[in-house]
Length: 63
Image (cartoon, rainbow, N blue to C red; front, side, top):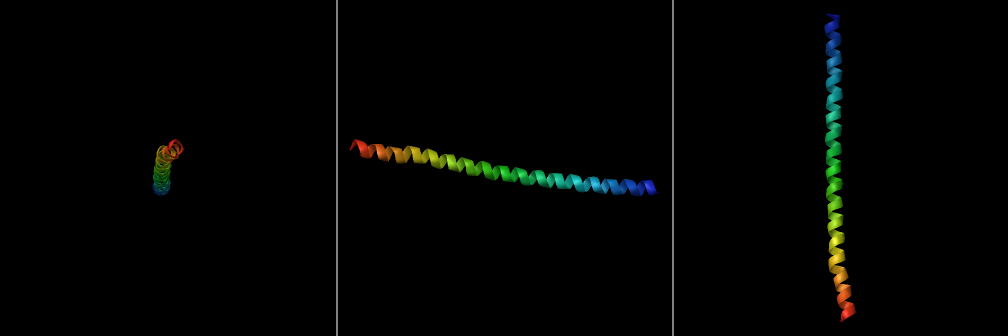
């Protein structure tokens, strides 16, 4: 009976550890997606700036 209780305790601990790992990985994945989206938006903004602003400045020089 004591061995069964010990196994139940160990199983409960293992479940808790696995749950914590899954939660942590889910959070990290979410943080990575947020970072990835912000990086893409920054690159899009920079490309727009280079294309539009630089063209305006070049047009101003050629007029």
